[in-house]
Image (cartoon, rainbow over all chains, first blue to last red; front, side, top):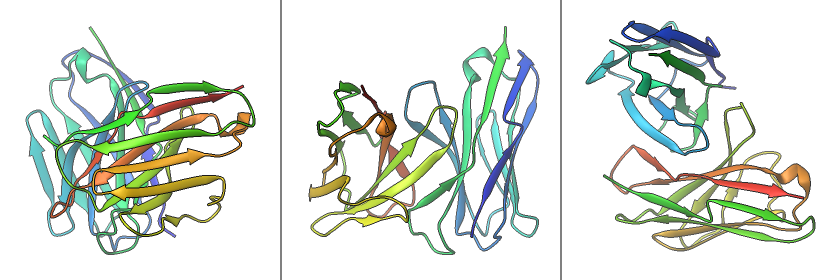
Length: 114
Length: 115
């Protein structure tokens, strides 16, 4: 059974710092991996989607890497800003195909202090 | 970008009543939608897969008679929490899978509080 874990559960950094969020999964036979952002009391916004054949994806100050063999993904945020404060979730699909049914990690709640 | 809406955004109801939550894809068609539940400070748990024109598929442990799902059109899925109890209080989020895309678009969520 696939399990997704995110460490740390919470992180507080001063503005301007570069930071890394971690996501691990137990079954390496994933179709893709997604990183989402969730603001308090809100829905999810997709940040990056990495296909199983890819090693990384970049969008602005965000860079997500994927190492299937070790069952890990990282989300790198460069030059963090207070507006980056949110909960970040990673998710993989059930099974090895693109079922659309996602298994989420517990999330990392990030606070960027001005 | 693709937009998914949910209505209502929050609802308070008395124990024993039923509550209907709507999930709409506003600018695209979605043959498949998903319903998730999120407890405070916890992650999202998939409840069921909603398929247009057919019965929903429920995850293990989710009571289909408790959480009725209807996907009557390519842009609308509804979740009805029947005979709600305080333990049903949660944040319910839907998502829609755009045809031809691998990205899910999530709704803003519905906060349900059962008194």
